[in-house]
Image 1 (tube, one colour):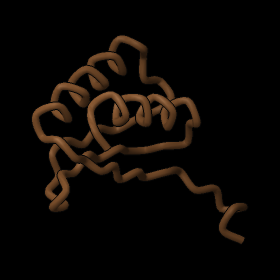
Image 2: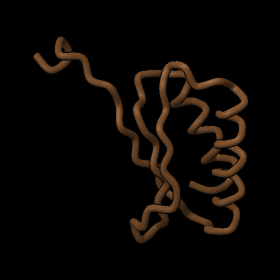
Image 3: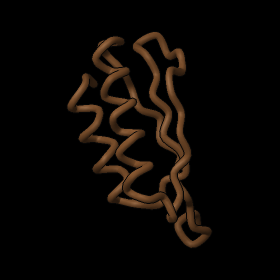
Image 4: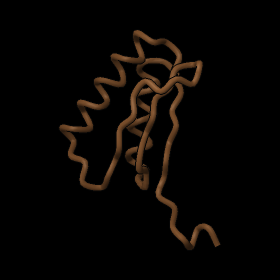
Length: 77
């Protein structure tokens, strides 16, 4: 993913909910940025995270996202 595409995907994932953590890695798999997400995350904090992710993606180029989600026990069965 690149710049704006990365930011839009993060927004989309946050709206879906049930995500614990998002990690952004470069094309070699090196972790560049990781941030926890929780239900109480306010828009101001989210805006800062998205701005930082977008700025970082511009300089790095190609990135990938690693998403950690909450899993209900009912979903596992």
